[in-house]
Image (cartoon, rainbow over all chains, first blue to last red; front, side, top):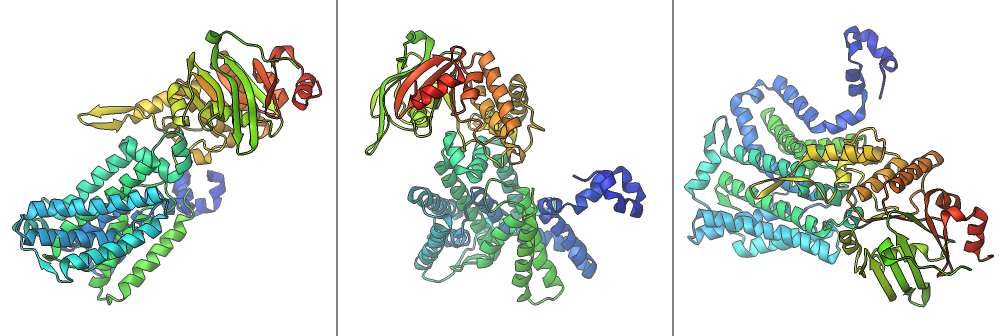
Length: 333
Length: 254
């Protein structure tokens, strides 16, 4: 760490800062930027878009932004648990599609919306469980297994739905999508609840510590009696559960169950986790980071749209920011 | 060559007789009798390949001996795996598999035996209690670390070894097994870890120490067992032997 004397050049520009040398040192320290990448990025985007297009900062737009971010926030949380174990869940967006289709079909069959939602969540959780089971029991790399299930459940979704979208006309889902409590719409509250529960699970339970230990050094964790395979399976199951919740929010938002994978959801969920300062090598994670990362990516798309930038440029912008974040992340302590 | 002498069973925390282990056609050790007294530091020395590490690993369940009897704490106890040995009260300080780099000192000390507070059906970590306990565990053994909230990644090799030992002792283990605890350490760090082992001895913790540093073994241990070519060659009191005698026993010149 720099001492005041080390920062002599900074002192003449701002004499008042002499008493707080840590600020200058902090701003020069790359690991500060790495730890706070998603917050800095979000604040930066809000300032830039706020100046370029004042509508961006209107209450209505901010509410719409949060609403649009809810699904990605929930998915990022699921992805965080998996990446914390040094894995990756490539089947996440496909699981959302499967969940949506099952929700639509069960509802269309007349079983009622609640049973449809429960079955959708159970199905996606089962997909996650299966991912974890194959990875740990078969000792196959996470990447390969989830790539396989990505393809497998895409096919399953197409077979089940016959490739046709199913309309879901449910007043419950309609109210979920459009209703609000206080300043936020219900989907935002769902995302907030998911953040709180996940944060508690990660930081205040034995499972959370064992998850990070498994991701950090699986062999050492195993030598201390932690059942690392179970932890991994649990992480994938949580990821599947989040996909199910996201599927409900998605069907509520668009009013139908589409047999289409939103690949940007998958890529953005990984991007949000990276932006959130979670190590892709496992062992280091937070929930707030990826949640803010998801907000940031949504703000980016929202702002570019308000600035009338063609939608074609949005993936380019997201990609550039993710690679930039990954570069900064190298300086993480 | 002095034959291994027997000590009363009540005094031995761990003992084995006629223990053998083969890997395919290779004999790691044959017909070994060994005992460690309660509250003492017992050293196992020998040349590379003499079988000392394999013997110790066979005691704690990492390897399954092919023949022989194992007694721990007065009971016949063959351990099927390290987890069983740990549950019975044997903690092993691993050479490499020690700590989780990304977790803090306090988290590492309580890994897989976290203190929890129950609220209804849920159990939440009692982080305050763990930090308090971690501080007192470290101070009881006079271990200095910058902060218990620090990630282990940033600690030196000696500090890491001290924390591994602290965790083993802090679990209330009846026996702590250390395999070459100073092998990868510098001079000053070795001195620190040796001081720590000496404090364990003062506090009457039962320790098995595997080493091939004869001077270290004489400084730290009460009883020394010497292995040579897969056999238990001799056992001596550390206070009654000399470096030259140990060299002679290890090389077979005696």
